[in-house]
Length: 207
Image (cartoon, rainbow, N blue to C red):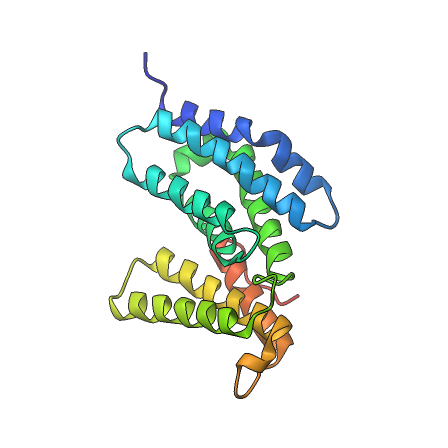
């Protein structure tokens, strides 16, 4: 008998549970912690691929994660996007799944949020090459503008907006020379946090 949707999500949560619990137990996260969390999500992706073999969205998600991990040493912007994508997907799951596997899923959301925060507070471009920073800022802004123009799904708009804010904050923090008129790091940080809290289903608060 094929497993139910709930059983698949439950198994996926259990696969990453040890890593997720370790993330939540730490006061401060390192980049290595974030990478380990992403690698655990790759194992989760295998569970989903086997459980939902006909679902293209899981194949696309797995491919996105593979690309993020492959580029980890040079460009971690894709890893940030993947983490925010996780927050979006898990926060918008059907209520019946949240009731059944709620604790595991909520822990995954919180771990993804914490990893996003840890990642954005370290250089997304480890070399801090201004040209590469200009490129990730440009790409994130164009993607958001195109989605807004097309009146895309609100949850997708929220995802791309949060991502763009995270990229701006990171660039303000580590490579401000790429801007003609650099903004306030505190303002860009607060904008990112505000959108991240909305994305995760929390009431926005300024930290």
